[in-house]
Amino acid sequence: MKRAILSDIHANLAAFEAVLADVEASGVEEIYCLGDVIGYGPDPRECIQKARSFKVNLLGNHEEAVLFGAIGFNPKAKIAIDWTREQLNLESRPQEENRDLWNFIGGLDKEHRDGEFLYVHGSPRDPTREYIFKQDFKDRKKMDAVFAAPIGFKWKVCFAGHTHHPGIFVEQHPHSFIDPSEVEYRFEYAASPGRFLVNVGSVGQPRDGDWRASYVIVDADTIHFRRIEYDVQRTLRRFDETPALPEYLARRLQEGK
Ligand SMILES: [Fe+2]
Image (cartoon, rainbow, N blue to C red; front, side, top):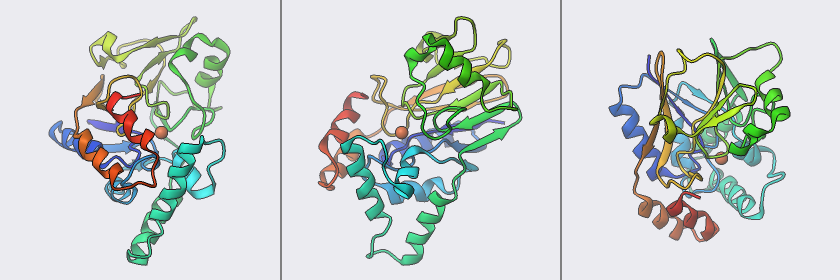
């Protein structure tokens, strides 16, 4: 069984379509998405419509902000949240279509459990909002708490997104972090002792200095980190057509930062 795990599409349709083409060419049987299909980018409606067919879709902090308010968001992200909410209410579109989009984001779960796997947007102890940044591997107290959550469920691998920075946190004392490039973008989790928190990176707004879309494919023993080139200029043109969105959100896509 091959499963693709995507996160943080952020309404970047060109990146999303390039990833879905790669998923299809890779013989993947099912797709899980860890949230933040929307927010920041210019094509929220189209991205939700594509994500609706996935086997699992989780709630990201941007869907939560569209639903309940952008608490704790920086001003540029908040502008994008308010604009996204307007887009889901467009009077020029059939009201039934708008209702379907709202039903999608309103029906998202905060976590998914599946055998020895846990799936969240942010972290096991705060599935929607907590960030686990690369440098946090040095914070033993934080990482001990992350690996101990949620109470009563001991996972072997937890998949998360949210930071837009792919990599593997290894439960050890001291804990460690593996950049995908250090292991040639493949990690044999089944044969490796221990437990792993795997960040799948971001499809639509990578922030690790690599502009290409990021996601993973998981099979019975290995996690494959994929980086996919896409037509960034196409997304930048969509930002040009959408002056309500801060220009900074477009500029950062070219650098992956
Ligand atoms: Fe995100």
